[in-house]
Amino acid sequence: MAITRLNNNSITSITALPSAVAVDNTPAFRVNNTGGDQQISDQTLTRISYTNKLHDTDDAFDLSSNTFTVPSGKAGKYFFHVSGALNTGTDFEGNELQIRVNGNATLVTRVRNEYYDSMSAEVVVNLSVGDVVDAAITHSFGSTLAWRNATNENTFGGFRLIE
Image (cartoon, rainbow, N blue to C red; front, side, top):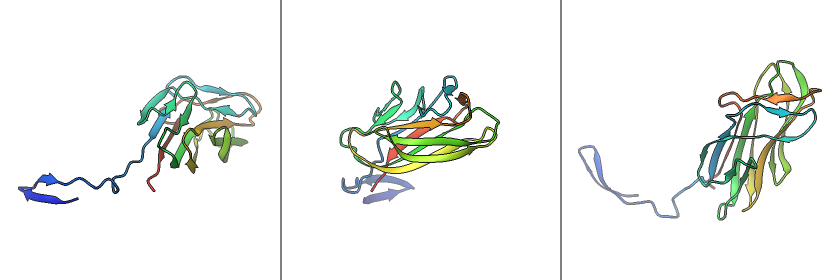
């Protein structure tokens, strides 16, 4: 990048970066649930539902299936994050929060439920075009629990990393 002239604290001309230097961490998305709590049956791995796109640069997150699909030309290394909470003040062992690729757990975070605390998981994975990513939760509370819908608590997001 070359600045050709500075005059009275303003730039009058900038040469663009060469294309080999330009960077782009897309696709990127972040979704949450603005509907009611999602019911999670005891010891049943359940895909987490989302109802609202906060952003989705490549329209790669499908709200009807609650999945992200790597678009054409966007293979690479990705970062994903999921967070939320079960709606119970009872402390117990046996929660698993998962980020899955093509239905297979890529990351399994085992978390103890502590009085309404949130849980989260993050992972970096190499993905190919067409790979499908989702988030899932299971618990062993003994009966159905709600995956709580609270402002910015139940979220899922990800983006392609610049390498």
